[in-house]
Image (cartoon, rainbow, N blue to C red; front, side, top):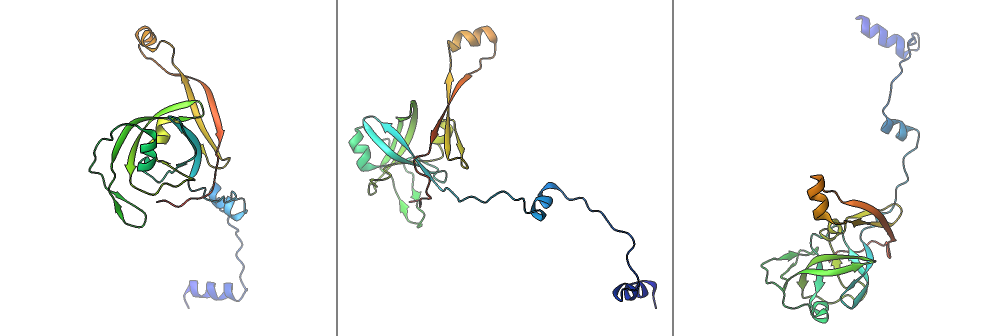
Length: 198
């Protein structure tokens, strides 16, 4: 009988015990799983809404959608605002239901006020039914423009305020101009329910 077979037979019949105990070092992730110290799983917030002002139109709940790659405004809202003539586009939009929509055009540099901040936003104008609750969609291009930091756990949208005093003089004197971040403004999200995309 080979040596390993005799060893296994003795081990299985409890005649021979393993004398040496092994210590295995686990990384933090494995230790957390074994000790049930995993962080609490939170709900997916989906998209959220925030109040804004466009011209004289108060939008209580503009949908800020991290999944949308464009900013959308219904044609009826665009007409109410009287923003002039849109620039023609050959863009086609595929919706979640796989249908294709062709926008009426693009309007650029529309000033959108969120709290005390004003941002230029490019909107794609689409013929669609106006949703009274959520009349426009601010997609991914808006959030970097607004220097937004989204704290999903605490339900906060953080916008930064930059003060630039005499930037031309400073850049000439110091060789490297730099923005001075002096204030950080925080706003609570108005609505934190998951919403379905178009």
